[in-house]
Image 1 (cartoon, helix red, strand yellow):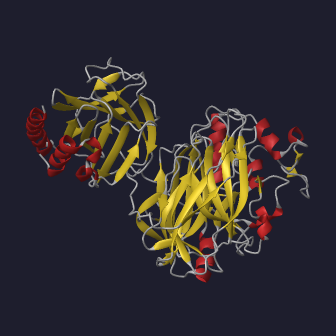
Image 2 (cartoon, helix red, strand yellow; image 1 turned 180 degrees about the horizontal axis):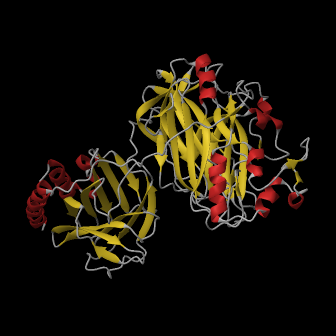
Length: 609
């Protein structure tokens, strides 16, 4: 029996389930899977293996699984518990119709198990890649964890868990960073003041706030979301933008719908992203050597908070006071952090045809932009330490690729199982240096098989985005490094020959051919008779067209390369990254541990009796 299991067992028997300190110190990650606080999951991992500890308020069986969609179908599952003082763990998988099958290869292994009158703790492990076709390979991508529990121990597949079940998206291999003790640190909150959410499916609400007036430089080191209870699925994202420091203080507290014809002009001065949070994300702590600078003349004095409310069911009478809490310190870190938005510039020029199961969009942070900016600002380059990949409902897979001198480096970030309801910063295992002349590509794969009309780039969750937010240091004067496909070239695919010039309307109007005359380009695209074959042909066509460089500073200015047309770089296919080589060796040591543990558990249980 391991010292970990023995320590946890003794503490449980002596002082109760909530005091398992020696067990908890060995786990780097933790998550509460249910809304009632009854199912706690902890885990740790190395290059080959992952170890879980489930602590559940039940004396029956515990169910844990990895699902491709969040449902029972095609899931990799473990069922275990403690029955009559003897622990058990079994490996199962499910088919298309959710039927449960015992896996002929038992790849989940018991480490220890503990039970008292109210709770069960089950510790189990498996390889990241088991080589079993019925097991799910665990990668850095999002994983839909499914969970269940029952008051009785497991007998067979008909021993149904009832309502004690659920799903939660997690990134099991997301590296964790040390979190400073926050009790003594000052903080400030940026929250909406109980605003009324309009009766429509998508609302972007903006308000300007003033940061604390400080006499000298400080660093923000941690940011926590403050989501109003019950609004977890209503708030899609929160962005903080740096505003012009010359704003009139009377603008503070001014709130209005963003991107609205009647919004205050001062909103237009808030261009540069200061921080980003998205649905499902947790708190974010900066690395020990990096902080977000406030308190100097170069730092923001005013920020605008943009909250995206997603209300597809048109709920009425909703009010919201969500926002962010920011912890800061006078003990300065070595570097100032920055945020760089890369990907596809959000615009109607981003076009995704209907009826396609896999459509690829590319957003380029071009070598032309990075070379011009870094040569001027930071010749030694910048260091990326975290990435937030962002898309909407049609998004299925996102990647940030990194090229240098025509050769591809390791992926900067990826999520091959993207979940719209779970978007958070991924810490990089190792910081990545981005140099002058490098080229970054944000790739997004979409599924529009169930859509009848074109999906456009835009703000609604029914529109699409393809973005990577890079957290880096030291901070430079670059806010957005993005691209757009050339729109006129895209229109030639459907046969458009001429548009009215000069352009006086948006979306602009088509002049010829006759079948599209006087239609907006958006109407023309929807009029075109799309098919799967045509959609894929359009995808191939667009990826070969010149791209428009977007290279923006933190204020409302652009770098000189902004607006130029360049050809997309030649690139090869990305190979799927798999963790560890699969292992077929028998787990002899674990079996021995289990045998010893069974004896020990029985002994302690008898003592307790």
